[in-house]
Length: 496
Image (cartoon, rainbow, N blue to C red; front, side, top):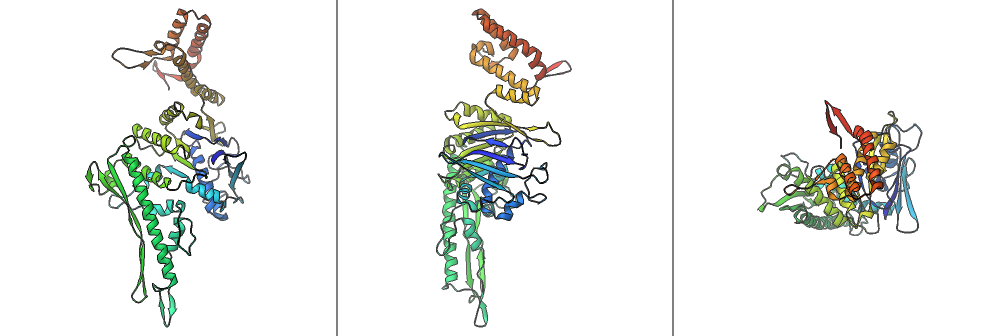
């Protein structure tokens, strides 16, 4: 099951036009300048899946004008509708369409959408930071984060007579205290032989056992990711230490006490030393903290995978605190271990990272499984900015799209890149690169590339191709150079 198409109508940065995104059941690498609408895509898919667990009022709040929780485009005309529509490819001759909007709550209690939410994950930098975002004086206690963000997606095997399907439902039941009843003249709690006490105790045991097992499995997977010599290659061993939930009735059934559960993040080994890192949130640098958070989150995700549901793994700028070598580690992990099971959606505002990831994909055997999108702010109407996006197929197609938007400098730069690509593809190496015995390959300027290529074509007497390059050189001098260069104080500065 994959996302085939997504329409955002007056949702967040998207308006009522140019709002249909064709995923074609593929993975997508998405670059967008800040405020261009790329995160609206991330949150629209997340919101639709989450709404399957909400009630009518919860969904309507997102689409009701002037409601404090509304997610409407601020330029939406009064009275115009707003909605999210997602078309899923089921791998059959037909597709299925899901909608959310004002007075449209058809996804509520949809088992397919709920289980798709369970089997998907949406990870951004804030999500990873939550694993180690504590004051120095505090200990990294993660139970509240699990309670708020993770329990609702973890399936639970309940003991009779309970029928709860997820950890959050079981935990909500456990948090309800036993109730006193009048026995003789005294209010007393149920005794350990009562059915009420036995049921709660059985639920407690099931909760503790299943959560301890899950945390053990997540710890094992996270350490594998962190220590993989072909991955992060960190000499770090972590543990998600679990303190169990408990309750007791004492003093002749008149007192009721609870021990609340806790999940502690411990660093058990660091660079060969045991238990030396007491405050990992203060001791570790941002790159290591990001790696730990990502390893834990992916370890949790692995426990939730459901093969026949929508399995989306959406990553929104989660790598900003990693250096390029560690970003490549994450890309390798995604391509080799997660691409086969998930529809990957990678969002970034870092153009360098976008280009590196795009190049890796284009030179991989799975390149046909990917789309590349670029997002800009279309400011033709200054009173109503909206996203402008197009699929990146080649430098020439990008140039054409910029030309349509009257962004001539950007069009010129991408035309320059396309010309360089053609020369590097079809001309001998000495036409586009300098080589020397003691120095690495170094690209020359486009003007030099064209001059060298014209000389080569003249030497082999290909007069037709030579004439085309001579004409191209004239256009470069007349159009591309003035548009992609800025003169300041007589210095010609190239904008690339």
